[in-house]
Amino acid sequence: QVQLVESGGGSVEAGGSLRLSCATSGTGYRNYCMGWFRQAPGKEREGVASIQMYYGRTLSVDSVKGRFTISRDNTKNTLYLQMNSLKPEDTAMYYCAATYSTYSSSSFCSLTSTLYDYWGQGTQVTVSS
Image (cartoon, rainbow, N blue to C red; front, side, top):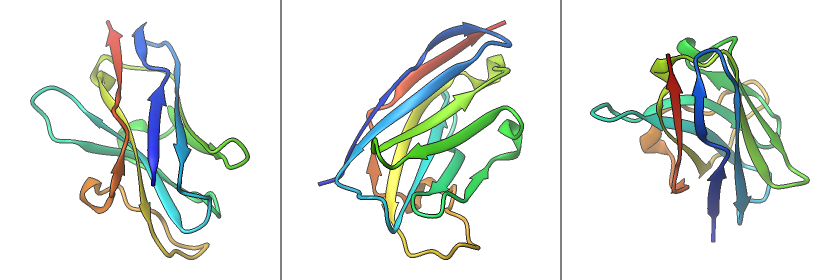
Protein backbone atom coordinates (compact mmCIF):
# COMPACT_ATOMS: atom_id res chain seq x y z
CA GLN A 1 0.00 0.00 0.00
CA VAL A 2 1.36 3.39 -1.01
CA GLN A 3 1.67 5.96 1.74
CA LEU A 4 2.94 9.51 1.43
CA VAL A 5 3.67 11.86 4.34
CA GLU A 6 4.71 15.48 3.74
CA SER A 7 6.64 17.70 6.11
CA GLY A 8 8.63 20.92 6.08
CA GLY A 9 5.97 23.54 5.49
CA GLY A 10 5.82 26.74 7.47
CA SER A 11 5.67 30.51 7.37
CA VAL A 12 8.44 32.57 5.80
CA GLU A 13 8.93 36.08 4.50
CA ALA A 14 9.17 36.79 0.80
CA GLY A 15 12.58 35.87 -0.52
CA GLY A 16 13.01 33.09 2.01
CA SER A 17 13.44 29.36 1.50
CA LEU A 18 11.81 26.14 2.60
CA ARG A 19 12.45 22.50 1.85
CA LEU A 20 9.50 20.16 1.73
CA SER A 21 9.95 16.43 2.23
CA CYS A 22 7.67 13.55 1.35
CA ALA A 23 8.37 10.21 2.98
CA THR A 24 7.14 7.40 0.78
CA SER A 25 6.39 3.75 1.30
CA GLY A 26 4.99 1.09 -0.96
CA THR A 27 6.20 2.65 -4.22
CA GLY A 28 9.64 1.19 -4.68
CA TYR A 29 11.65 3.36 -7.04
CA ARG A 30 10.94 2.00 -10.47
CA ASN A 31 7.97 2.85 -12.67
CA TYR A 32 6.60 5.59 -10.47
CA CYS A 33 6.10 9.22 -11.22
CA MET A 34 5.95 11.55 -8.28
CA GLY A 35 5.03 15.19 -8.11
CA TRP A 36 4.41 18.21 -5.96
CA PHE A 37 1.12 19.99 -6.29
CA ARG A 38 -0.32 23.02 -4.55
CA GLN A 39 -3.74 24.46 -3.91
CA ALA A 40 -4.46 27.96 -2.72
CA PRO A 41 -7.86 28.89 -1.23
CA GLY A 42 -10.45 29.31 -3.96
CA LYS A 43 -8.13 28.01 -6.67
CA GLU A 44 -7.73 24.72 -8.46
CA ARG A 45 -4.95 22.32 -7.58
CA GLU A 46 -1.85 23.10 -9.64
CA GLY A 47 1.05 20.89 -10.62
CA VAL A 48 4.35 22.39 -9.46
CA ALA A 49 7.01 19.84 -10.37
CA SER A 50 7.29 16.17 -11.24
CA ILE A 51 10.08 13.59 -11.32
CA GLN A 52 10.70 10.11 -12.62
CA MET A 53 11.72 8.03 -9.64
CA TYR A 54 14.05 5.86 -11.73
CA TYR A 55 15.70 8.18 -14.26
CA GLY A 56 15.24 11.34 -12.23
CA ARG A 57 13.99 13.40 -15.18
CA THR A 58 12.10 16.46 -13.95
CA LEU A 59 9.46 18.87 -15.15
CA SER A 60 8.30 22.08 -13.50
CA VAL A 61 5.72 24.73 -14.12
CA ASP A 62 7.00 28.02 -15.55
CA SER A 63 6.10 30.05 -12.47
CA VAL A 64 8.61 28.17 -10.29
CA LYS A 65 11.43 27.53 -12.77
CA GLY A 66 14.72 28.79 -11.42
CA ARG A 67 13.31 28.94 -7.87
CA PHE A 68 12.03 25.44 -7.00
CA THR A 69 13.90 22.16 -7.42
CA ILE A 70 12.37 18.72 -7.14
CA SER A 71 14.61 15.81 -6.22
CA ARG A 72 14.46 12.34 -4.75
CA ASP A 73 16.65 10.11 -2.62
CA ASN A 74 15.77 6.54 -3.46
CA THR A 75 17.93 5.22 -0.61
CA LYS A 76 15.74 7.12 1.83
CA ASN A 77 12.46 6.72 -0.07
CA THR A 78 12.01 10.46 0.13
CA LEU A 79 10.92 13.15 -2.31
CA TYR A 80 11.99 16.77 -1.83
CA LEU A 81 10.99 20.20 -3.04
CA GLN A 82 13.57 22.91 -2.41
CA MET A 83 11.85 26.27 -2.64
CA ASN A 84 13.96 29.42 -2.87
CA SER A 85 13.07 33.05 -3.49
CA LEU A 86 9.57 32.42 -2.23
CA LYS A 87 6.84 34.87 -3.18
CA PRO A 88 3.47 35.57 -1.53
CA GLU A 89 1.76 33.94 -4.50
CA ASP A 90 3.46 30.66 -3.55
CA THR A 91 1.23 30.51 -0.47
CA ALA A 92 -0.78 27.29 -0.65
CA MET A 93 -1.23 23.80 0.72
CA TYR A 94 1.43 21.64 -0.89
CA TYR A 95 0.82 17.98 -1.61
CA CYS A 96 3.05 15.20 -2.85
CA ALA A 97 1.52 12.57 -5.09
CA ALA A 98 2.49 9.37 -6.84
CA THR A 99 1.28 7.26 -9.70
CA TYR A 100 2.46 4.08 -11.37
CA SER A 101 3.77 4.86 -14.82
CA THR A 102 5.87 3.31 -17.56
CA TYR A 103 8.23 5.92 -18.94
CA SER A 104 11.42 6.20 -20.91
CA SER A 105 14.51 8.19 -20.15
CA SER A 106 13.35 10.82 -22.65
CA SER A 107 9.83 11.38 -21.35
CA PHE A 108 8.44 13.46 -18.50
CA CYS A 109 6.03 12.75 -15.71
CA SER A 110 2.79 14.69 -15.99
CA LEU A 111 1.81 17.73 -13.94
CA THR A 112 -1.89 16.88 -14.29
CA SER A 113 -3.25 16.10 -10.84
CA THR A 114 -6.03 13.81 -12.07
CA LEU A 115 -3.41 11.36 -13.35
CA TYR A 116 -2.03 10.76 -9.85
CA ASP A 117 -3.52 8.04 -7.68
CA TYR A 118 -1.87 8.46 -4.31
CA TRP A 119 -1.75 11.63 -2.24
CA GLY A 120 -0.30 12.84 1.03
CA GLN A 121 -2.22 14.91 3.55
CA GLY A 122 -0.53 18.16 2.59
CA THR A 123 1.70 20.71 4.29
CA GLN A 124 0.94 24.43 4.48
CA VAL A 125 3.33 27.01 3.05
CA THR A 126 2.65 30.67 3.86
CA VAL A 127 4.78 33.46 2.41
CA SER A 128 4.31 36.97 3.78
CA SER A 129 5.27 40.14 1.95
